[in-house]
Length: 384
Image (cartoon, rainbow, N blue to C red; front, side, top):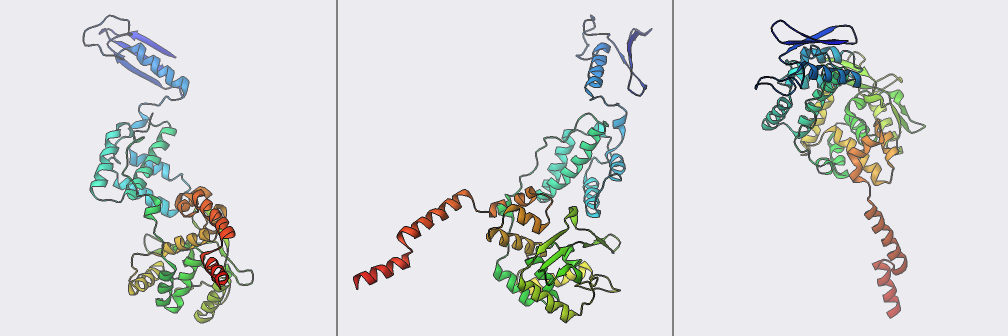
């Protein structure tokens, strides 16, 4: 129900009730657009126009209580975040993005596109990596978009804000060579080589390798089951939980890796399916910091400090692709949630149509003309 009444002072009071029966009112100098008025009258400055816009918003489902947007970005985030099914790492990343946001203590109604643009400009001026800028802005955008869906605010002020250009993935993704991996492995302490092998030949993430147990290795079936990961939490506590994004998987492993893991089990003295391949104190897994220290120490000795354990995961993926594995096979081996995640990271490594055409044509050339070495032998025997 809506109404307009003239007040004793000559102004007009427009009122309406929302779906919950709550009354909302505003006062205007003019009743409607057709009322003759003073020269200072502005477009939209009429009671009827305001009621018309409110009615249209309620009919289309875009109406928002003006007072709901008075909540700050930080306050809304805290309430919203508690309802999300996030892993601990995701919550930490979101917390960091909100803390770094200069308008986190502003009312959502007051956040403007210019605020987001100024934030992006400052992060770029502070020399933050483009990927970091993208991640923080997208995390804050997720909060704002949730507020829009919750009908806290009408629209997303961050939509369409320009972000710094990221490096092309094929240029940014660097993959160690087999010689580099061999050098790192040769320099590592014997007990640590199995950790390198799990990253390089099974494609495990750091936390997944950290969480490997003897029962995960199918020595007869030549498989490795990825069922958990180890993460260090604030306060120096260890958390053992399923792999990220539900990427539990069984990876088929080569005979050479089975032999390497068998040697590791024998030398380290790992007994029982629930025993950690990289044991720490009090029957738990090795602390991530210990494994990181061993990695840093090893790569420093061979002059390859720019590489991380995750680089070995890229090495594994590139090897599968080079061997002709399709997208779904690589996706399942790496534990990606969807094939699109795999393609977004490694699409440039798959042969293109031009590569296949060239290889097929070369096959025709070899069939008809023979290889250069064959031609030389043929010519030599003919001349003799």
